[in-house]
Length: 258
Image (cartoon, rainbow, N blue to C red):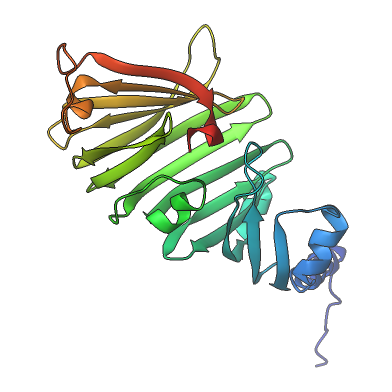
């Protein structure tokens, strides 16, 4: 009795075609994709690999201080499942000197998101922005998540640990010293009448005593509030008031803080 071999249906031909297109897509050179979709890209150079995985050098110059810039390397590995949500998802590793952060990045048409970033930020990265004399201890980043669309920040969370140490900062032609205590930071999103969505970083001691607050608006304006408790770590500080009271309050561009 002869065996009847059925021909593949149109559905199987379609599935095969989609898989073939997907295979060809992930093999496209990453440098070609960047040149095609971001032709005037000023941030990435020496791009190697493909959409599936690759590496590039990155460089960012702060808008208020173009003579100083941040630079490093970026490694990525594509996570194809996120394409069904309408976004490009990648596991990324960002390095700059001894600074290293790892996590998931998702990019949509009008939004971006970073999720579960962990690692450390060392003083060599922060020192490249200005002339502050920073402690050697790194800032430890835990479970950092941020999402933003065209209207502003949507969600924010994360924790920071810093052992502190001696810091010198220039002000009025002089360099002032302060012995920063060990501190922790908790990031969240705040909504006010003046700003529909802004980032809030609450600084405190490991025992929960308030040290200060940092706020970042959608227009990259930074509000800083520092308490008496923090400033009492300065030699010969003569300020008066309760430890939780705000002793310094200022507003300035984000990159102007250095």
